[in-house]
Length: 601
Ligand code: AMP
Image (tube, rainbow, N blue to C red; front, top):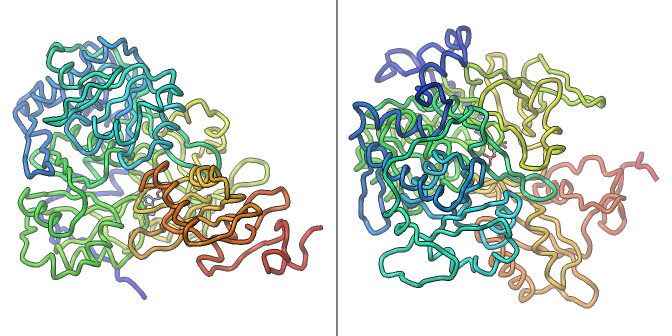
């Protein structure tokens, strides 16, 4: 089906967007200019994300403006002004200092969407520590793996998660983890050994704090992401990333100081930190924190009652709303909405257009990834939307479609509409500075001065980029990146499992769901009971966000001659796609497939 371009004329805009002329902004762009719009630490002491997010407003006329509004599960609402946030984050920075946290130490936070998470994130940045979020739906294994790889020194979590995820039992294997701070709910008064009470420490800490000198290149954020093989990778970001957070908040999300902004991403993932905490605060808006999970009516009610102006969500949520039926959106007042934006996975053209039907506005898709540190490609308010396209590169960012050469370099593909790997020219301030302690994996992402994203895409004649898929085997389920290796390793722990191969299976709502193929050791029989046992094992160890939804037993899994499981082939069969080159397949007869006639011996 052909999707018509959604035209944006000046008359169709309710107000003049922050970015009103894309071409002109590209032509005259300078990162130095963006730096001038931020204040920097006093006395030329550098640039600190938390200072830009909090003090920049708390020290001026916006001090009393609501920075964070928390909508709790119990229906309670808590407002934190920029002034109050300044005080609380100062206190937390003092807490960290009193616990012996030094510059560059890693402060992990594992929590649901509660105010303490935001306070800990910003307080850690003030103290010069590195903030690392963990998704609250992770099971003990992904939590322990990330704490170990990132050498977490402090963990802030809730009493409930500490108990449920049995974190006390993991601590023996985490020698770097020195301090655990627990947020307790009213009534929870269990005193657990070797833990501190978050609020007790906060209450006795001083309310003043002077942020130490912060070089823009000092480490600020550690975000875990997944690759095809090996352990999760910790992408490190520096304080200079705030330039991109600020600019994309201003130009892509069109944030203005009086706005009410809602980013539905969980702060356990990169979008929830960069756009659920940093970008909105740096732009001085009121940022909503919604504790409850998705429910169509609840979300519509929040948009109406909170008079949300800018809403940043994800394709899975949009598809769930579409599934619930457009009529559910009727009767709500969405007149305050000025911009709808989406990120994290491909947004079908139907979703873009459905925005107009339900809210009177189209969704603006944008693209980025953990490594890029901020939005790189986007549909801007001032620009026509081609439904299904990710849009055009941010002014200040140069994108291209590239092909890797055998010599380790790349060739840029100039011709339009040709598939290739999406590449970004190195030089924007939010580009990650490394995978923590994995230099080789980091260096493999670059060639000839370009960062290679691992995404396949094309660019059309008008300079719009179109997502085609991943170049690797990682799975995107409900917007969350999942590494197949992490899941396979847990399944392999079961005594019955000989081999495991994990892929993403197409799903109309979540985009993909995790599916595992398993072959068994001699003496074990496939059956419903074993399937349930494996699913339960994975859920217990990995948590619901990562565990497979489906398990299929096979006599043996397709492997290369060197013994690597061919996930590509499992996926092609599952998706009904061509199986491609089978020349490296180990045992063709066993899988019932014919190898290409030119298969090498
Ligand atoms: P993460 O690093 O977890 O944020 O995941 C980044 C990956 O999500 C990208 O490399 C893409 O594969 C995918 N992604 C993000 N945004 C989009 C988008 N707008 N359209 C298609 N895929 C996207």
